Length: 211
Image (spheres, rainbow, N blue to C red):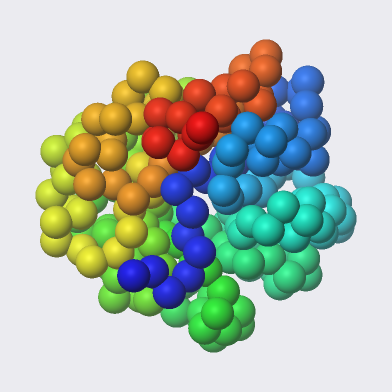
């Protein structure tokens, strides 16, 4: 049984890939559509702007009773009292983030290989964000797609919840979950759609979370 509320449908808010919706718009629509975790992803704003947005997002998530996670930025997570932070291989070291944020905060780590996933475990991560599983255009610096088999092998080896990311949409959710993933994380599958709420609802239903 999980000690922390990791969530099965992580929606990453993004205003670089699209400009129709703000982070707050996306969070609210994703929550209305059934997302159970919101992750703030911002690469271009100033630190002050990020903290201001993150604090508002935290408020939205508190109202909905959902965990709020900040992508990459430990300082913004601290300043916004976020429930967690997600860190890539080249981001802030997970053990040091744990020292700063404490034992109760959720810390996710990114992995592309089995070795990466094992390092996440050794470093004290609460979950592994594995991928990109499929081709994706959401990250310009994304690695080549891993496919299903490497993730399935890592899941069998590393005793942490795996959140699959990269090119995931309603039509391939079942394949990912059958491989043993605990949940999924999406960016463009929600943020870049004309109706983010409905897009989230389709993913939620594909995960068996919907009505």
